[in-house]
Amino acid sequence: MAILMDGKALAKEIREDIKVEVEELKKNGIYPRLAVIMVGEDPASAVYVRNKSKACNEAGIEFEEFLLPEETTMEELLNLINELNGRKDIHGILLQSPIPKHLDIEKAFETIDYRKDVDGFTAVNVGNLTLNKPTFISCTPHGVIKILEKYNINMEGANAVILGRSNIVGKPLIQCLLNKNATVTVCHSRTKNIEEITKNADILISAIGKPKFVTENMVKDGAVVIDVGINRTENGIVGDVDFENVKDKASYITPVPGGVGPMTIAMLLHNVVKAAKKLK
Image 1 (tube, rainbow, N blue to C red):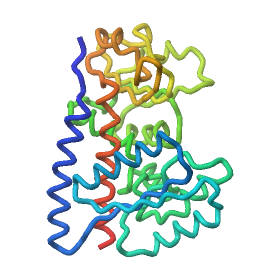
Image 2: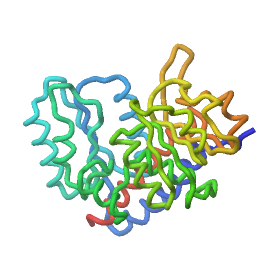
Image 3: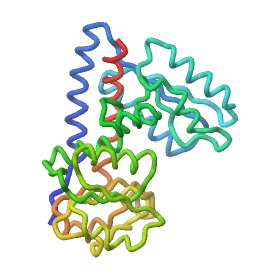
Image 4: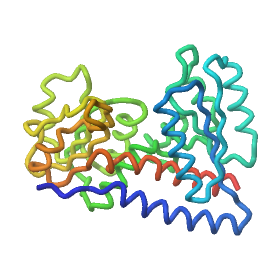
């Protein structure tokens, strides 16, 4: 039976440390502030924004919301981002995705000042991560690494297999693991014989958004399994991993919910505080 990797407890620990740090910054006249832009009325996005707002309030981080209508033009969106780039009281800017299809999300991300890019999506921050330089690391991959560190999982020389190559999770994770000297393999929709590859993984991380895709026959005995997936089904939220069957084969496993999810917001708060210290 695998040891459960409790992301919720770790996130709580990190958030409590951040709260103390924010109090110290305020004593020195620095008031960390996050600006969140949401375009349109995506229900899931509204929940995420609410959660981010609540987490910021609990940590003492100031939070400013910009809710733009569905019909917002690209020019209006970029003007708002540029206005926030220029505001000295804003330390972090987050554009909640998805945004309406008529808008170019890549262009919008690239317009955000890389020093305020607390999501770690701009080319500058992605490049710095690749070069293993100090940077803002994308929140979910950063959270995954923190969980592995918390449970003393040795990444050096480990065979790490990532399922999924998204710009938000899969690709930054490649760099995070390489920077920890892991040997990294990435599987995606075009990969052949996925099962053969995953069976060799010491650390298996799934971020593909397919409910219970990872079954016990894909997992090596004693592997560490990290489930990044959040899939809404008729039976509630489930991960990418068939948890009930895989947990008896793995040595460590993250649950869904309560694993990687809470860590994403904790690392966002971490990045906002980091930005506030640099921009003071």
